Image 1: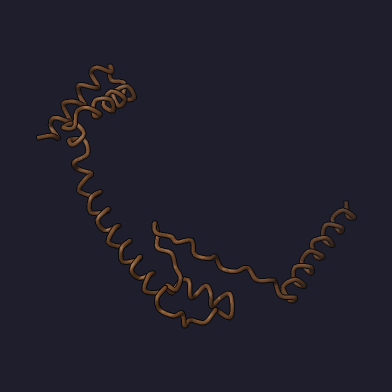
Image 2: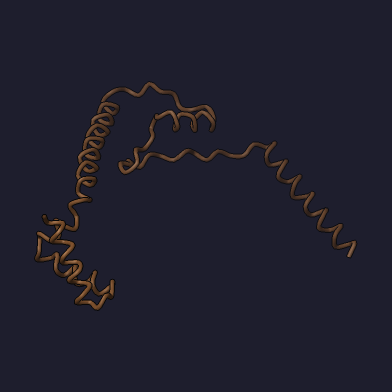
Length: 140
């Protein structure tokens, strides 16, 4: 019933706005501030998805808060990761991971210094690039 009412009001708004969609939208926005039947008619279809979303979100939030409080109470027995790969695997496996929408500001993975082998490889590639550039300039 309220959906039919909403459709009639949308048609009325379009007629008053001279088929200008932007003006019709503004007119509807002013009408819904006082006409709650119109607001319900326009949003009823969407409320069937919005309400379960919020109920589920709050259930998840409560369970995450309970889980975090249990973790705080229990002593931490996990060892710190030995390598970057192990830290990455732990983050994927679920230890200290953030839940979308409920992030707690977890500490990011620590940046580690490059090995000497890596530094040497980068320098070698840079020298090769300089030599090629020098050869191409000499040939011109």
